[in-house]
Amino acid sequence: MKRIYENLFIVKPDATEEDIDLLIETMSKQIVAAGGVVDKVDKWGKRKLAYRVEKNREGYFVLVQFTTEPSVVKEFERRLRVQDSIIKFLTVRIDEDMKRLAKRQKEREKRAHRRPQPQVVQPSLAQAMLGGEGSHAAPGAPVPAVPAHPAPGPAPAVEAPAVEAAPVEVAAPAPAETTPAAE
Image (cartoon, rainbow, N blue to C red; front, side, top):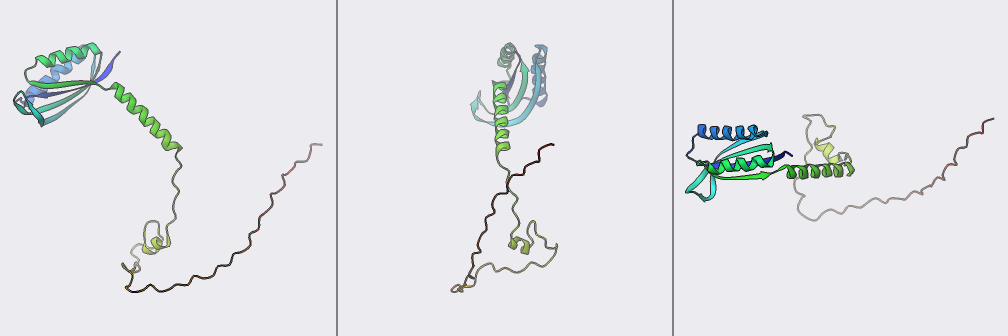
């Protein structure tokens, strides 16, 4: 059964671009010859290492993603070990992670579908007056001045108008319609 793997290897910083390309090509050919497929090759470039490895403080990082049988990975790693220009490498199986991420994405989509859609909010009077989003003011129309801060001093007393409650009528349910019997 074929699985998806990622291999990150670090090449010595003094290696030339041609040497790195030749190394990538050799490793890719080895995977293809064994019946695998090279999905992606990313050259990350020269980066500083977290700690010194074989007296090197930086290295050239290369990420290879491929699909193959598990037995091919053993041979791939063996070849990486015997290369003098490679400082470190790490191979990780990622097909299980990809399945788990796809499952999480489906669950998120289900939850988003069940979630009620947000209601459209009508623009307020202040937005309409200021020419905000959704207002009916003409473009370029003068914007009314609104004081940034209230005037100092005591706030004027505002008397609320008396509101009279109107009686509410409750309608009785309408009787169910009956259809005349067929004659």
